[in-house]
Length: 396
Ligand code: COI
Image (cartoon, rainbow, N blue to C red; front, side):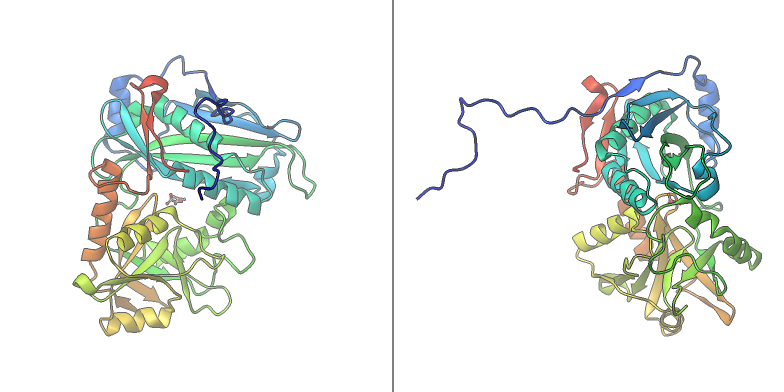
């Protein structure tokens, strides 16, 4: 017997249209950067210093929730010196990228996933979550308006920086009643200076980044400010980045600066990846998830398991750990060459970028450029020559 289905008959009423995608009101820059000046700025873009012509803003109030988003000229803000976000750090942010795919086309990598992570960070910091469709609409509007700011070439992209912060002027200790969302963009090349090299890292024995029950899994400003002192100490010891250990036992490796870490066990076809599990103190990196998926799709074994500092040292000494690399949106895939601790230093593999990191990095770049299939629908196309400026979307 065939069971009746919920499908409407061919001549039945059309389903009610879903909610319309949020519209971003365009108030374009009256005097954008001249093309020659923009091209000069794109030649060697420093990280996070030169911003594009526009930004998207939206405001949250208790009565209206998230209101209309506006695309407007990038400009300084006017706000009260008593804004909550300035004093108590009620502020969350994201980082993701758009890549050039021709004169009128770009792809944004996993915007909906970044929108969802921003919402998760917001919940942890008692900030009203921005709806993912508003986040995506803001992204499309900014990338379309500033597409000419996306540099061409390998390792070049447009970094997108959304931030949501409390701007209500009050200094009592309670969550604010007014918030501002800003989406900014800047062209970028390599995060680390000195080209593709393996970085030196120093383990922080004094400070911790995150504790159980804390905010380690949220992308909030305080996590980064709290890391600067340890980062400065690492730099004084001659390292590029600081390695964070768990707060309880000070034994297990958690993150590297603002990046997730991967350990390569074995070599060649038998190489396996191990990365620390997301237990609440580690940021759930979108690049981390992308690399896990790309590796598994290609038949590589990937485990999420704790890695102690002692395992790291011994694994390198015995040749069991052949490579270690970090990943993040800004730094992409970065090999670790040398580890400094208060109790001695060691080299990882040959101390240079390894083949597994190289393969995964090339694969990731090929997905960004559209030279590899995109079965997970990570690439969200923005096409300013298409009607509505859009040609295809990431799932989600
Ligand atoms: C990223 O990888 O995009 C990060 O979040 C690091 C950033 C804070 C520079």
